Structures are given as C-alpha cells and as structure tokens.
Length: 398
Ligand SMILES: [Zn+2]
Image (cartoon, rainbow, N blue to C red):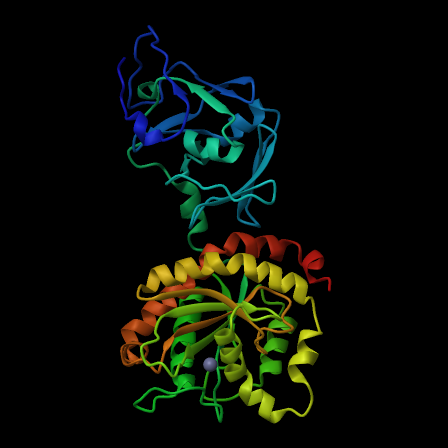
C-alpha cells in the first residue's frame, strides 16, 4: 500500500484506503481524478471537491450535506454556516476559534484545523465530519489521489477580515468602581479603580479592533451607580457585559485570576464575602433592600443559566492567555450583574493584596496582556453571543 500520509494523524477516523489500480493523476493540479467515495449513515457519496492540506483530507461540506439529503448554506449576516449532514443540524463558525454546535446543543470536540476555505468552498476535514456526525462516517479513498493545497486559498477569511470576529455584537465594558469609590488598594496605595479603568480602556480598544461595538460604563474617574451600569447594559441591549475588578484578601499569599457570574447563591463563603465588598459602596448609599430588589427583577433564570454555561469557556481563554494562577469560575450575588438581561461576567484580575500580583497589575505590559486575554475570552463565546443576538425576543422574555 502506498500510504502518502500518516493514519495516526487522523486519530479515530475509520479510514479504509482502497488499493486502486487506476493511474495516478497529477498530484499538484485539479486534473481529472477518481471521485472520493464516502459512506455516511448508510449512503454512498461521490465527492468532487476534496483536497489534501497539511496531509489532512478535506471534503466539500455542501456536497456531503446534499448527498445525505441535506444542504449547507453560508449566512454572511450572522457569520455562520448552517448545514444538515447525515441527519444532524450543524452550525459552524468558520473563522476565529473553530467552534461548531450540533442540533443546537452539543458542542463536539473538534480536531485542529477542522475546516478550510478553498476557492470559496468550505471544506471540512474527515475527522471534523466524524466529530459532527457522531462517527457515522466511513471513508474509502487514497489521500494521495487528492490535489494538494500547500497553502489553502482562504478567500472567505479575506472577505470577513475587515469586519472582524465581533461584527454586529455589542459588548459593555464596565471598569469597576471610580470616583469616590476607590475599591481596594495595593500596599503602595494604588487604588483598584485605576487598574480597572486602565485595563477596561485597553480591552475596549482591542475589542473594537476585532469589530465589536463597544461601550464603557465609565471612561474616566467617575462613579456611575451599579444600578446605572445595569441600566446602560439593558437599554443598549448589549450582547455581553464584562465587569472588571481586582481582588484583595487578608491572606497575602492569595493570588490569581477568577471569573464570576451572577447567582442568588454564592459558590462558597469567600465568593459571598467578595460580592459583599464589591456591592458595599452602593449598599451604603441605599436605604432599601437593593440586592433583593435587583435580584427579583429581570430574567435572572435565563441570565444565570447562560452565563454559567459560557463562563468556563470564557475563563479558560482568559486564564490561558494570562498565565499564572488560575482560580477558576465562581458565582455570587453581585449587584452589577443582577438585573442584566444578557450574559454577564465579573472578572477579578488579580490580588492587590499580593505583592507579585500588585506589581503585575500596575505594569502597563501586563495590563495589555490582560486586555488581550479578556478579548480572546470574549471571542471564544462569540458563537453563543451570535445565537442570542439573532433571537433577542426569545431570550429577553422574563
Ligand atoms: Zn472591585
């Protein structure tokens, strides 16, 4: 058998290579060649458009879809591809972090480089197809018969590039505290409100560069109340709210990064303590049961569930991008997240009570790394944000 590539590379893919006796076509051209034969969910498909790129075979998603009784179409306004393949409905986001959702629910684990654009066609790797269809695929072909694409033509990316990943999505960036509310402070007396603003402005710039529509709750040293911040998010109908804070703890060794989402119930006593601190300034100004009022307000069920689902994805990219200690995802009753109708996170970028964290938080280079990591966290959940943006009426119901 003339194996032109490594089977191991395809992992679990059931790849049966035929020892065909036909003469080999030229490998570097699109010249006539035997069609690729794929068996999917009991059907035999002859695929015309298939290429080999970086030793991975890719086949036309549309051809596969049509062969199995479905279709695939690009929906540029929403920046996604909807396809029905072998009875499953797959939604792909063909740029940025590769993500797919199957039947509106399942997020399959995709192989590296799951798809490429080749002369305007979306080609999906065999392995990715297997992930999408839950393994209902068997292939019979010789990979060496496929035309080779050393550098796949990526016309789609070029088209989408200037618009950016975030086109059409609204993110409200909320630098915590401000004005008379200094937040916590480090040993040198630098207040939290300065760090949150510095990172918030950098994050806004980075998100705008990626095509997001961005507003800030504050761009200078002023204090909008937590209720006002929530109202900004809701009246603008933001797709995501991101509140930026820095931590503090009596134990000076505590350090690292955390993502919180809103819950009426705190995940642990420390989370509740933190929420009390972040809520404190507004609580002093208020006579009534502010938290109780806010929590009884809007759509919190939907918000908590959605944010809880997205927070780990967001946080993985955030923590991965920054490095250092990862304290994970927690939940707590934060005023500034309560009453928001969109997914909302509060991030604690590090501990100002820890000398090493404090030095990093004051450092402009680190602030920029934080902003970049936050932006990549936002990018990672873009597919879900788009789903929400496409169906606001459904999601906004209390
Ligand atoms: Zn804070």
